[in-house]
Image 1 (cartoon, helix red, strand yellow):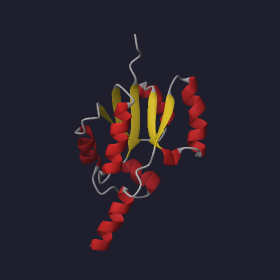
Image 2 (cartoon, one colour):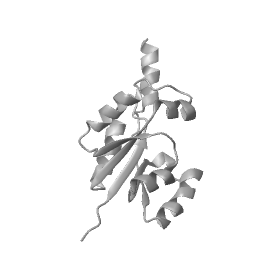
Image 3 (tube, rainbow, N blue to C red):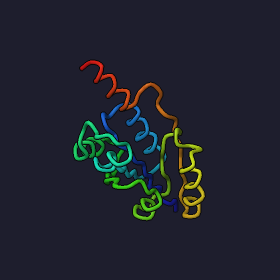
Image 4 (cartoon, rainbow, N blue to C red):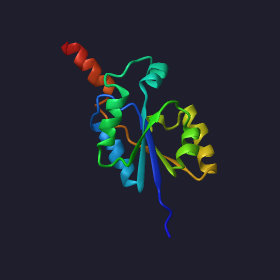
Length: 140
């Protein structure tokens, strides 16, 4: 019997765009059940020193409505090991802009010890929430 693959990814998902959709679609193609952690407004303020354009509750509802997503949870901290312990996923999906960073180089062996892997997806070039915000500011 094949083991069910539980996937996990996390993000702010502010000003939802094609890059967000691409990561969710690719993640679902690589797992049976996809958990998506949406960063709370407080967490975004804490680590990015920015307030999301769209509030947490609305961002979570948007992500929940995507057909590739099986479950939405709040991301209240950035501790990926505690997320692994809490949600018991087998694969965590992240953009390849994180590959080779100090954080993920330290996480990879810890995940492997626990029977989970980190899967890196190509970053969607040419679009980001930051770019969209900057464009909107220029229009304003």
